[in-house]
Amino acid sequence: MASAMELSLLNPAATHRHRGGLAGLPLARRSVVRFRVSASAAAAAPPKSSGPKKRGKTEIQETLLTPRFYTTDFDEMERLFNAEINKQLNQAEFDALLQEFKTDYNQTHFVRNPEFKAAADRMEGPLRQIFVEFLERSCTAEFSGFLLYKELGRRLKKTNPVVAEIFSLMSRDEARHAGFLNKGLSDFNLALDLGFLTKARKYTFFKPKFIFYATYLSEKIGYWRYITIFRHLKANPEYQVYPIFKYFENWCQDENRHGDFFSALLKAQPQFLNDWKAKLWSRFFCLSVYVTMYLNDCQRTAFYEGIGLDTKEFDMHVIIEV
Image 1 (cartoon, one colour):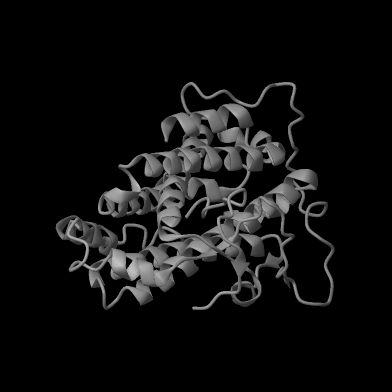
Image 2 (spheres, one colour):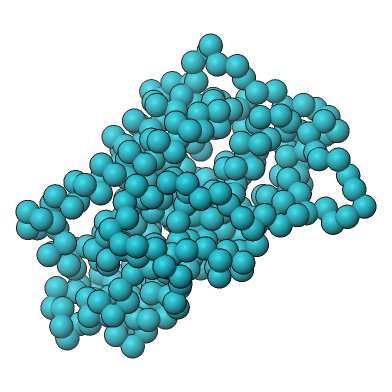
């Protein structure tokens, strides 16, 4: 889940504890001060000490735009995917999607190499700091998706085994992404304690239909963000300051498959799409997700400038494509 429903502007219910360059896309404007990547690691890496190399970062400052953990009404989810109750379910489509997920195209994709640590050691100053923040936020967002999908997979096993297995396989993908990003933090001598986050973070409650709207948008936005960055850096390799972006071409296909699954879920629930209230909610979520993405990115313009992108043009491109 690339953005993992970073919808902190939306909060239909209170939080509680858990219970269960691309062509046509301009580079950053030339007036921007470009970050320097030093050839020497001495100035970039923290001073060595006799203590452990890595320090766990278990606390993330909560703001309106911080990636959240989500939960939902699992009983309602079970009713929605009960084939005896909901005759709109296209089981053949879900069967086909299940086979797609079982293929696991990226099973051997997320394999690191020495290039990661070397690139991190060359970073210094503001660029190093914003990359750490990028990895922290991305890891938290992916792990949020893992927790939600895992619980849905567990709860729907008896009601709809096929849909349940798809959720479980999506949780596999999200866990893989989160682990890969957390490994990236180790290049900077840091690590997120994901087990601690599972127990300590507050969970935001969304109704199932809000989960569907938000997650569909999140996954499709994730696809376009990742593929756009990949294509931009392939065309402008001088901005390829950290090798994680080289993995984005295959990575974004996970996001796309997840989005296709949520599209099928929405089609199976026409009451979430077809009446005037549903259409208003859809538009509201589109606007809210896009605004949240834009505000998040505007706060981190230095990150996008560091990889040679103009933040506003990048976001507009993603919104238009989605």
